[in-house]
Picture (tube, rainbow, N blue to C red):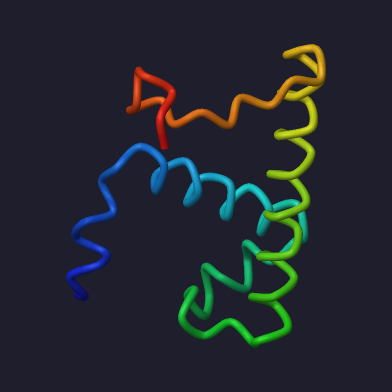
Length: 84
């Protein structure tokens, strides 16, 4: 198993993995993935999953912006002084 897969314990990576599985199921690719595995997806299948993931993330970001009255917080949260 690759080192990358062993390090996939961070919360954002877990959320992306969950989203990927959700999208695959919505696209009715989950049975194919169970049979062949993620590594044996065609380029078209992988691209379809990735494209739909991006659409979902964009829609989520739009909802967050609407929730924040159209304001986008672009300040670095680690920099309390507001300096970049």
